[in-house]
Length: 157
Image 1 (tube, rainbow, N blue to C red):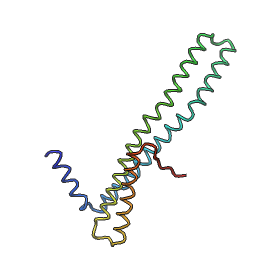
Image 2: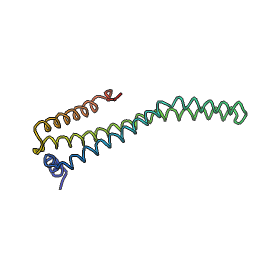
Image 3: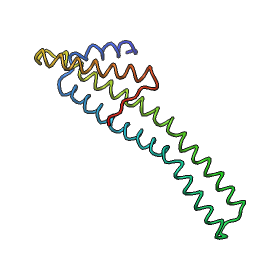
Image 4: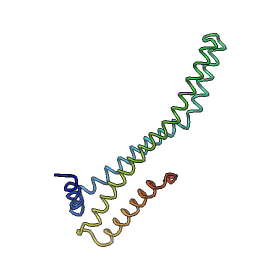
């Protein structure tokens, strides 16, 4: 069975997805959004506090220099290493947040598939089906705009 056969079978089964499986997609999607959002938040926090960390460890090194624990060559080496570490702490944000955005988009796609399945389920009343279709459309629009435009982000304050 090739790729086309597997994908066509999968997309043909979306309308026939039972309520439990669609709900499972939505719950897994929400769980993934929470996990990847938490990862992105932690990464951003580390990058935001990199300068404060560097100031603190530089001050500790200066105190050790003044107390005679280290000499000036060791002090300069510590300062250089702290600068490199600060840049690494700031740079990791770009990598980790980009990975987290991909994970969030995949999770949103799972949620959207779940709502599309609810919208195509004929056992629900017309109003519920329309609401599920609208929710799915909004989620797909969010995926579209956050994927195509890099400076767009959603934040809940």
